[in-house]
Length: 417
Image 1 (cartoon, rainbow, N blue to C red):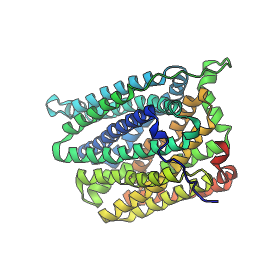
Image 2 (tube, rainbow, N blue to C red):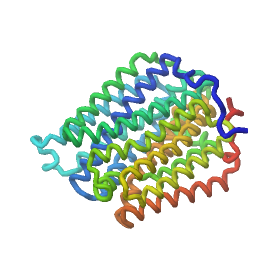
Image 3 (cartoon, one colour):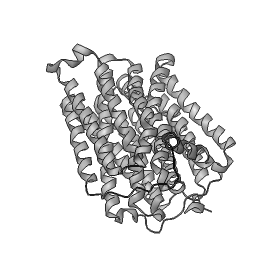
Image 4 (cartoon, one colour):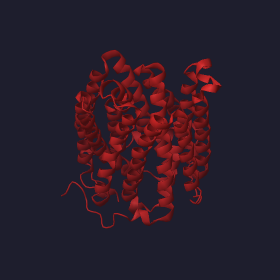
């Protein structure tokens, strides 16, 4: 048996008109959010020159997203998902406008209030993201047939990572050549494009369970579903701890400034490098979906990710660092596609939003908590030792998961189609 299946039609999901609009919505949202992430990170480091503050930026976004996640999943399974996303995007746009205002020196907001307004506004973005993710994942499953879930997950990953390439690159380049205000205006423009891409998608009916549930039961049902499924719990946990310990992205402003000496333009390239690798792997997976031996592929992907991060930590060459970050993105994409396919195939539609919300707690928010962990570890250990520690912990997590989750290790997703 092959590690990857061969697809009969790699472009099947793209032929669905509403899924194409959904992909463009995700593309522009990704550009906007990651542009903003790069801009805020570089702006904060210019203001304080403290890597711990970069970690606190991640924490400021993660806490609201985690706190609202279960309620957001409940809302996504009860009300129209398209409407929820539109409202959340408006909240994001308001936050971007506030960040633009903070960057205007004539207003003097940073001089008057310090850096705290930036933390608060980033928290508002985390709040909106907490609603967008479960609704978007539920909506995606409604615009494609079940037989194309793996194919749609692959193309969703492709467009997300193309956005993850262009977003940081545009953010860093505009910041470097035109300044922080122009960069935030760009964020606003891409967020508006995302709204226009979402509008053509028709509202979808919500599948309501006949079971009578209390509010507490509805909020906790996603957690119960995930924790009762060893495959789903194992996949989420593996990625959560890998991202938590192995993410070096939060420290890239410090690497760019203090080790590689490449400025905000170079930072944009470094931020884009993992996504370039992910796009390359996504295109391969479009033709060879990782369905057979999915568990083995997942473990290989996370192992490769951890090794790439270890090598990146000791690199002092800009171009070698780019290559290693690209490799980390390639390996990470294998686990992303497998996890999304698991979520789509194993989750009933009536709890899809709540399960996606749990996934956002495990995976999405672990990026920001991982940023805090990276910032704290860098302050305590130093920059390079902290990233080495994170890469080593990622490899340890893979070893433990492979030992304690045999069902995940032997997973074959062709059995669930």
